[in-house]
Image (cartoon, rainbow, N blue to C red; front, side, top):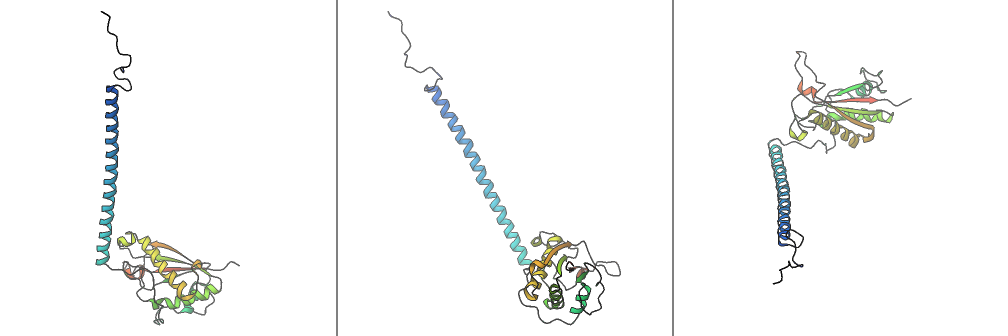
Length: 230
């Protein structure tokens, strides 16, 4: 009887094309699919959670805005006639180093400063009385016509502001300076590029004679006039 010989066409176990090989490859494909499905699922869950967090944050901001409604830091109506209190246009021109005839102190400095003590609302960049801007606006326009440029430095009282200002007095101070910058540019003809802005936050407080902080007076803008180069 002749000996049986292996079928030369039968695949070797484990070799490509064999049932074992096909089963192993199928298992690998299924495992890879499962890994990718898990990655996709985690990514979708992370995106959903980020969306939920943003929704919660927006809801919190809306609730805070409803509790503490604040005007935008922009003055839209034109300032009314001045109140007649505080320094005059001539005083401010002199204090800032111009050629006015007032009695301010600072005309000899190269970059004198003037405190603009118009009151800002608490936790806001909005002026309480836009009429307070009138003497300052007129003075800055006259000095600009002489070649002066300006920096407005916003200042705050020491309370921590709301999330609208990122709980940061520097941000609130900068917004106050920007309010005044846009008011002067809009209603008094001093171009924005002639007025830079900065912020000192709550680092330059004003104190009462008793030693306590004067909160109202600390909420102000300090104006520096830079004379033209000769």
